[in-house]
Amino acid sequence: MANVTLRSVRKTYPGGFEAIKGVDVDVGDGQFCVLVGPSGCGKSTLLRMVAGLETISGGEIDIGGRVVNQVEPADRDIAMVFQNYALYPHMSVYNNMAYGLRNRGMPEAEIKTRVEEAARILELTPMLERKPRQLSGGQRQRVAMGRAIVRQPKVFLFDEPLSNLDAKLRIAMRVEIRKLQRRLNTTSIYVTHDQLEAMTLADVLVVMNGGQVEQIGNPLDIYQRP
Ligand code: ADP
Ligand code: ADP
Image 1: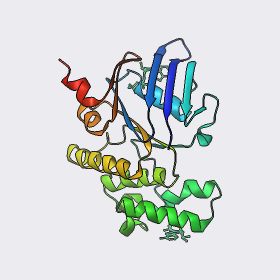
Image 2: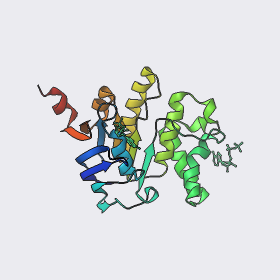
Image 3: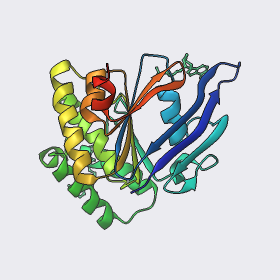
């Protein structure tokens, strides 16, 4: 588990566009933080900086008490869940979840334990031998989450993970993600443009606009304010 702290974080893209203009956010150990705001407000840029997929132009990002500005993505102890799942179509569900661990040279016995545990949590056990095309959209999204869970990271990062699903499934998955987070108690940062999704999921809600934090706090406080 880990705190994530952003201090005066800024991002200027090559060409000079200032996408993030000094953002301060503190996500406590085991908290679920949601970044919400209109398209183009900088949510994805901020998340990608935490992941190490985007360089930081100013300020500091701290994960678990360590400044990670210069730390490679693979060494940040994070796992990211994307909207397009990015599953390998030719691999079974089992191997999709095992792939990243094998790349790190983890022993097969340990991989098996972790994959089977993740499959149990996500109710994917009967589907381990299937290929992604033999799964429903919701099941594929669960496999994508399984790939993050087996890493046992300090922090989960979610980039609009439900935006490809239909409305009904999106609501069901929202509930599943919340249950999962309560069970694993892993610090999470979740990006969405959907206000309802944000309110349902967040312990800490960060409302962004134009590269800045407009409001931050408990969702009930933010949305009940006159
Ligand atoms: P959001 O995730 O909230 O939709 P983004 O973080 O994707 O917003 O983008 C924030 C702003 O930065 C947008 O105006 C976008 O056009 C701009 N932007 C994103 N990526 C780049 C890039 N690689 N180069 C220049 N500008 C970018
Ligand atoms: P295929 O090559 O037909 O696509 P899979 O991708 O399902 O087969 O599996 C390839 C390898 O993945 C297996 O030989 C085995 O090492 C491992 N594997 C798959 N499922 C499991 C499982 N449930 N338990 C342990 N290992 C598994």
